[in-house]
Length: 337
Image (cartoon, rainbow, N blue to C red; front, side):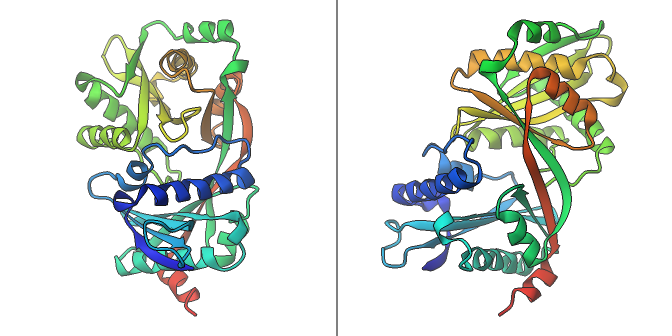
């Protein structure tokens, strides 16, 4: 087995194909209800980052074959953003419990240490071997979310239409495929900033709340093969963005869309905005993306109001997802041979 630093931009079609095969093998074991990945814009998905961020990757491959032809059995990347490094680790199920995952984590953690980062984070899926794997290495659980999944074929569309029309007087709902218009960008960013002030939860993918940074974030989504759809609630009297909801359809698995932020600014709560914009989004998504069969969303367990809205829309709780953190220096020291 050979482990080497790997640039997805320079990867051969065979390498991408092998990586996707390993990813789908892991999904079949860990998340058997999730759709498999397609070999569509995978290099873009792995390579593209926001300005000022970097992602460094390594692969573990069959050392009997030449680079570009090898079979990839493992992959690790670390996204360096702000003051934290965010890990993603993949090991083929047939090679688990042989030390390969630990070797990959050690390599990425050492790079984070050399780059001057003091904290490292990783997401682990409940009910999978990842939980015991990270806890055994000293990662500490810091945040828990529950994933819920909505199957569009089971939606009560007449009831959903009623929800979409139930927003309070003084607000209008707008649909913006691809992202908000330039005229709304500043108000959109302000709504995100207000939400950040109210939210102290750990977030390994922080929101963009500066207008320019927000535009860059949307551009990055498009480059990664992620098609964003936005629904806004506008306060008629002020023109402020009172609420927003975002859904992204990945080219890599277009059958299942990902819910991103849903925000209602504090002073506009209590007018049915969250339910109305999420219901409207589902109608727009059905029309724009006929391949979508399901939408998945994640919510903090204490966010009872959003969990209630999701249940009314038809989402069903799936499993818990955990965010873990570790001190980089301590982790490097504990993993030294």
